Structure formats: structure tokens, C-alpha cells
Image (cartoon, rainbow, N blue to C red):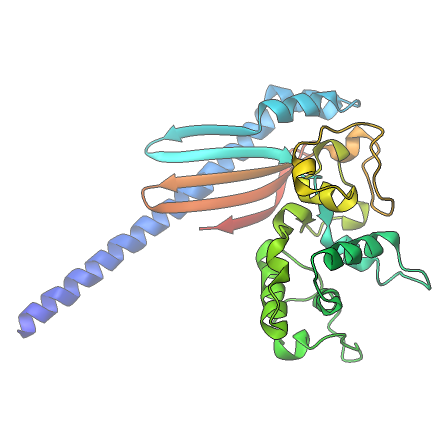
Length: 282
């Protein structure tokens, strides 16, 4: 019996080791694929044209032709999705407007609060968001109890959809309110923290939920909407005025091998031919 148990434990350890090796190999292959995609983007002949184009027409054509690129190699399936990285509202910049607010609240904040009210989300949620981007300062007067109840939550800025979901889940559990589930925050918000004060929204590639909030149309109408230069957009949000401010791509990779899946997202600066703000889910 002892020998049988020893063999069983030994086999389990071998299987665990094999699984660990497979996981490490998959992670290694994933990193190689990311590097290959970055090299592919840098060396694409269209990239030089995109860098020089001042009209924005070249970017429109590139995005329409490169929205989804699937391929398979050595048993690994890879799907590449390329979109405009200026299609959503920058949540960190939006919340930072509160710090500079005077007697009159900025219109962008008014619009966001009205949008939340439309979905019956309580005002305490906005307070939780503000607390979640507050400085680590003992003199800070918290607006909600999220900091006391979740002292380890990351502050300064909201870094990702997962970070926002942590805040959303706390609001749901503490208020017994699931109203936030009706809002697609991933389609609404941009989470990058680089130069968010200069971040602008590309009207031609606005995501449906962003258009839903900024142009007060239904999500279905926003999904079917064809951009027009004279479209009415609520003021207070920074809309891209020229092509140079639109030259940022959002690249998403889905990598599948057997039962393993990796989802990777990053931004690509066309002018600098550089990727940044990498997010991995494996």
C-alpha cells in the first residue's frame, strides 16, 4: 500500500511538473507572438504612410482593412483585432476634472452623472470613483467608505477594467444594487494613464457606449450610426481636432493553444512605432 501511494504521489508530481512546463512554454510562446506582432506593425509598409498622412484618410482605410486578422501557426491560433485607441472616454481625465471644478461643475461631469442617473445608479458610486483616484494623504476627507473597507485598493488612477470592476462590485455589495450591470464600462472607458489630460476622442471611431453617452442616443442607434462631420456632440469632452491626435491603435490579441487562452491588449503609437499600456489575461 505504501509503495502504491508513493507511486501515485510521484505520478501526480510528474503530471504537475508537465503542466507547469506546458504553462511556461505557452507563456514563452505568447511573449514571442507579442514581439512578432510589434515587429509586424513596425515594418508594415502602411505605417510610413500613416505617419505622414495629415488628412486622416489613410488611418480610416487602414482600420477598415485591418479590423480583424486571424492566422494559425504550429498549432497556435491567433486573432489580431486593431481599432482606434481614441474611441472611448478617459475615465481618469474625467474624474480629474472634479479637482479643478470651481463653483460650476464641468459639463463633462454633469453629463456623466446624468448618464449614471439614467441607469438608476446612486450618487455614492461617483463618490467611490473619486475616492479611488485620490492621493494617499492622511488629510484627505473621504466621500465614501470604500477606502476604509478596502484599504489595499490601488489609488491614484483606475488602471484597468478589472480595477473598475473591483469598485463596481463593492458598490453592488454595499448598496445591494446591481444597476451597474446594465452599463458596458469596457466599451465606455479608456483606462490608460499616459497624457490623459491631452487625450481626445475620435468621433469617427467612437465606441457605441461612448456615443450613447456623448450624443444621447440609444446603444442600438449608436451601433448603427455612421459618423458625420456635423454630428452634435455634448461639449466638455475633448474631441480630436486633427489626424495627428488620432494616430494611436488599440491592438488586441487572442492566443489559443489546446485548452490554454491568452488575451493581450496594448496601445500602439504610430508615430513612435512603439507599444505600451500592455494588459495580459492568461
